[in-house]
Length: 110
Image (tube, rainbow, N blue to C red; front, side, top):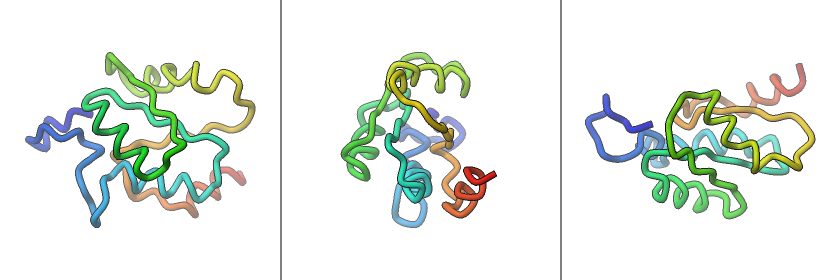
């Protein structure tokens, strides 16, 4: 998430592609499913990632992953934010901006 290979201090998910941060593209794809709750996990650059996520969706829950210990750990830090949730959970990667809403819809239907 630090964007080290991008030689930038900007968190990787905030690098713009097609006039929007990569994170927003992932959130747009997920929003097409009309989720009852959206949770974003942010570590490096928490405040900036939170601001970008809230700019796209003011109701998003942004969870602070203080130590970045991989994807499974990122999902685990969502436990409290999802403790009263009952339903399907889809995990998207904020640095993978080109997953289409159609792909997600097919995944949910499968």
